Length: 143
Image (cartoon, rainbow, N blue to C red; front, side, top):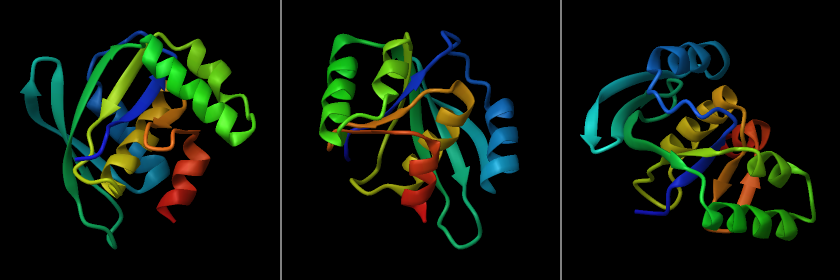
């Protein structure tokens, strides 16, 4: 399994509001989200049904306070990209959502991270690069 996508959240609310997320997913991303159940302490399993041409799947999701390592990776990503300003937004976020990956190149996890980012109004961090990006870039990555 690859490292989780880290979605910075401008809200401190860590409730699993899957109904709100699903409304956003259906309206803007032709995707359906369903809560499957709890995966463990502070974790949930979300079933993601993407557009017809993609395979659906389940991913683990959890929230926690933003830590120094998250911000350091965001800073590194911003430097690698030559700027862009998303790190300024990340610094204002006190919570992160972790979207588990089942593989290094996990389209379902990326789709879920993109949808969350569009709701919680924060950037997505892919620690592999590291790379910090927004919803528009995530949508482009999904093609």
